[in-house]
Image (cartoon, rainbow, N blue to C red; front, side):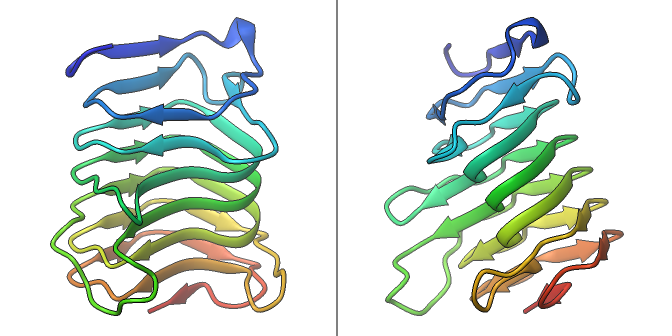
Length: 179
């Protein structure tokens, strides 16, 4: 794929037992969020390492992390993750910039996380670290159960100007929202 392409993923070959790294500005669209399934036990379902990526229409399950945006040595902004089901994962959606041992916050962010259902994670349903201007809206977040001191719905660490609205967050072990 090249920047601007749409990759359409058919449900008939599901489940896709793999981890996908996205390093181009593309749209990845599942045929049906109930039947287009990605999962691999280890790793991350989708790792976004580019700006302007859209991921929509998948069930992501039985994996370490459903979707990651950015990372310790990666930056990724202006991405959209919407209309997915994420279940039975370590973490649901993680937005991350910077070094975990260096406090501060970056100018990266501007991601939209909307209309997802995230159920039964062991750590976080949605976690953002050092990002700004992210929008987290209209997600259903439930049954996130603790391993140790975890079991969070939405966690924002060292960020600024993030908007959290219209989420349905219930029955999580620790907190619905932690800032």
